[in-house]
Image 1 (spheres, rainbow, N blue to C red):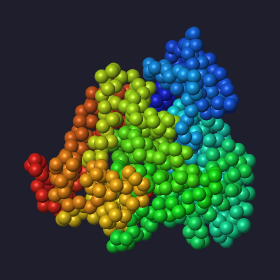
Image 2: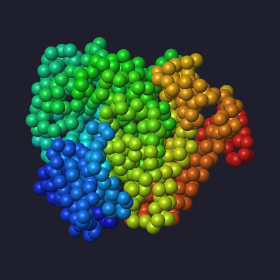
Image 3: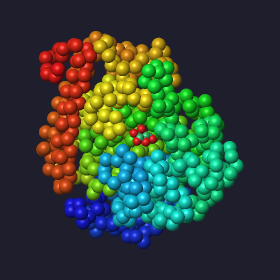
Image 4: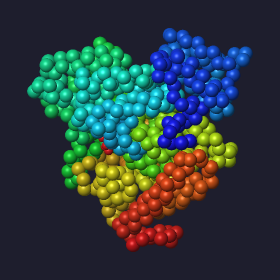
Length: 622
Ligand code: GCU
């Protein structure tokens, strides 16, 4: 593929070029995509499309005498078409049936952290796809390609701007920018993708209103008027996303109001238009004094929100990060997800590899989501959101293999049980993306499957987090966050490491219902991968497998490095097309360097504190 003249088709190489600009609805898009696939040389049987409006997002694929019939609504028929095309291209079994295939979650969202000036917060795939130089600026062909990618895995909401709304992105809901926004929404509509916008909670203040108090009538009226205008331009906008009272963003606390009062005020402005108000629960004290042992950051979200259960309007969704901290390698499921049975909830994951290798190191996330969904009270959660890993790089995701995370996230958001078999999901991605021999296909699947545990071993084993360089969050810096105001401490000393969050410590484990409370409270029961998240243990603590804690710390780091070296050997055996091969090899060299640094620095760090030698006599630098 020529990266400069063509648009990357990511996992959809059987859909070359660009769907026609004139296609207006999902049904027509489905017809157009079938034609494109045929013209690209795919040998397709007869495929009948049967639009059944009342099926909405659902679809059904049925076998006919000469091929298949895809039934579905707008956009279900398009989802079904993509699924059928993918199965045929990958030579997988087409799942036919009489019961419609329905999404488990109604809202399957991508949250882009793109800034109006064109940068992407925590973006590892280049500049923004949507903004440049302080305005909306996009390539329509790439938008259609992105629409294909999202719809092919059933994602239906795209929030285009950063939750930290830096100027001039606040203009997205102002008349000046709305015509351009409407054009962008038009591009995504035929893919069943609705736009969402992050808003600045204090926006009324920019309009001469002296306050952003949610109980102030002038504030309420301003938001109502504003919402009405936004919906005039984009009638199917999915809603607003809000980061309030979090990491210095404005919010209702300034006015002595709680978050139900803040969220409901905005939700009422959106209600007449069917919009959702998605309110993030990432609220904690980011100005903590490290000497303060009473405050324990993971407890914060529960303390702020659990008591408000039942007080939110029905078009409010509370968006809760998967873990109580912030997208670390190993975190328990946020206890808040169990605590609000009368409130609409969304779980937020992060595709952008902020703490997980920054789209340099390999880190395929499906195995991690398997653990999340195993423990998630699924029926209580009605939506999922993922922080995007997309950018303007030729292949959308920087590392060509990072696309597997967007792909598997979409499939999981449609039907979370599918992560049970993350191997099949990854294999499907490999088959769609590359034409490899069976042996090479197995190698790549194996690399993806193991990538997370390899990374976790060298970078953050046993539930340890935050040993990274502050701000950039890439590479080892074991003491980097110890004396900062972020509430992120592992407190290693000569005796041991970890924070006691049991009933004898900060009491965080008490925020969980059973069986989790007992599981996490007791170091003998707590899963190894969360052990140092919940407990402070001495280096001679004997682990379930009989090794001491210090030996496990050393062993994991050496194994992690060996794992990265093995990944490099495996990569060398793959015949990947260019430029994927060059990109993957370049990044692998960086990963090897990173893994070595992690292994040596962390081992030395613990050796200096503990004074304990490695039982296997490997080199630990003084
Ligand atoms: C992390 C991340 C920030 C981001 C924040 C959020 O702290 O480092 O860049 O703004 O999460 O989720 O709001």
